[in-house]
Image 1 (tube, rainbow, N blue to C red):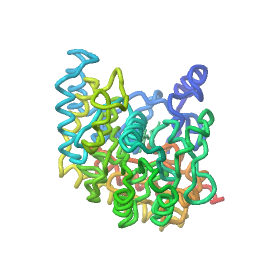
Image 2 (cartoon, rainbow, N blue to C red):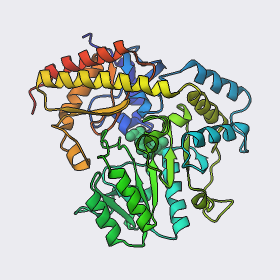
Image 3 (cartoon, rainbow, N blue to C red):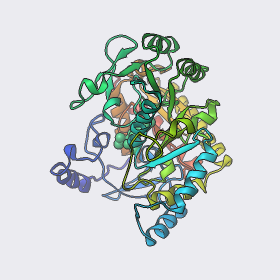
Amino acid sequence: MAIMNHEKSLELFERARGLFPGGVNSPVRAFKAVGGTPVFLARGEGACVWDADGNRYTDFLGSWGPLILGHSHPAVVAAIAKAAAAGTTFGASTEREVELGEAIRAAFPSMERLRFVSSGTEATMSALRVARGATGRSKLIKIDGGYHGHADMLLAAAGSGAATLGIPGSAGVTAAAVADTIIVPFNDEAAMAAAFAANQGQVAALIIEPIPGNMGLVPPKPGYLAALRRMCDREGAVLIFDEVISGFRAGPGGAQGLFGIRPDMTCLGKIVGGGLPLGVYGGRADIMKVVAPEGPVYQAGTLSGNPLAMAAGLAVLGQIDANSYKRLESLGARLAAGVKAAIAETGVPACIQRVGSTFTIFFCAGPVTDFASAKRADSRVYADFFHGMLDRGFYLPPAQLEAAFISLAHQDTEVDSFVSATHETLAALPVLR
Ligand code: KE4
C-alpha cells in the first residue's frame, strides 16, 4: 500500500480554515468524525475521483448520493454545457421545468403537483410549511436520527423518553422553533401510535426517510411504513416521505415504489438534479393547492427550476431504466456478500446493511434497527477503517452514521477490489478497543 502524498490538500485546508468555518462548506466534509485532514478533490470520472495531489480513489461516497451514473457522465456534461450556452438562469419559466416535472410525476405518481427548489433542505422545509398550511395544525413528528436538512424546526434532538417534544439540536435554534417537533424512534410502531395519541388532532405531518440513510443505512421493518400510512390516515396527518436519498436510488419510483406505500407528500433531491443544486417537493393536489400563488402558503426562490439543474436532471433520468436497478442490485449484493465474508473471516465486530446500491458498514454487532442501536457502533474503529480504506484508494463517507453509494459506473472488478481492501483493512485494524 503506497503512502499517499497529501501536501496540496494540507495547503488548501490551511487556506480554507482561514476562510470557512472549520475550513469547509458543509460540516461532515471536515473529517471531524474520522480525524485527519480532509482530502481536497479535483476531478471525478466514472467511479473514480482524484484529489489535489493526484491520488486516485474508487469513490463509494458519490457526493452523498446524487451520482447514480458516476462522475462527469458524458450525457450529463453535454446537457449542462448545452443549457449553459443558452443562458444559465432566467428567473422565468422554461420548457425544461415542464419536461422534468412530467418525468418526475411519471416516476412518482403521488406527486400530483410539485415545486422545484434548490436543495433538499428547502424541499423539506417547504413541504412542512405546506402541510401546516393545508391542515391548520402545528405539530410535526420526525424520526430520532432522521436528517432532513437544516431548517430550524427539524434541528430538534430527542429529549428523554420515547416520544418527546424536541429540544434544540443545534445552537441558534430556539426552544420555540422546536416546541412543536415530536421525536419518535424509527421502526417502533407503538412509540409512533403513542405520539399520535398524545397529540390527537394536532399533528400536521409526519416526515420520515422511508429508508433512513442518515443514521447509517437502516431498512424499515416489514409492515412499518404501512402502519405509519394507516396512522396518518386515521389522524388526518400528512405523511411526508423524504426521498432526497432514496428517490431514483432505491428504485425507479424510490422507496414508495419499492414498498408500495403512497405518501401524501414527497421530497426529492440529489439524483434528480444530476449533481446540480436541485430539490423538489410535491404531493396530493388538494394539499399543494395551498402553495402561492395559487394559495396562501408562501414559498419562493430565485434559482428554482434552474435551467442547468433541469437539464442535468433530465439527462440523468434519460440514462436510467429498469435494467439500471437490476445492475445496481447485482453490484450491491456482490459487495455486501464480500464484505460479510470479510467480517466473518476477520472476526471484527461489524455488520453491513444495504438496500440496493446504498450501504453502511457498522462497527457493532447487528442488526441496527434504529438510532439508539446505530449509536452503539464504534465510531473510533470506523475512523481507523475509513483511513485504512482511504490509504488503499477507496473513498467512503467520513462518518460512521452515513450511507455509502455504488454507481452504474462501478464494475464488478471495482467492487471486488473494494472487498479485498476491506478484508485487508479489517485484518489490520488496531486491537479493537
Ligand atoms: P441538502 O440541503 O443537503 O441538499 O439536503 C438535505 C437532506 C434532506 N434529506 C435527506 C434524507 C438528506 O440526506 C439530506 C442531506 N444529506 C446529507 C448527507 N447525509 C448531505 C451531506 C452534507 O450535509 O454535506
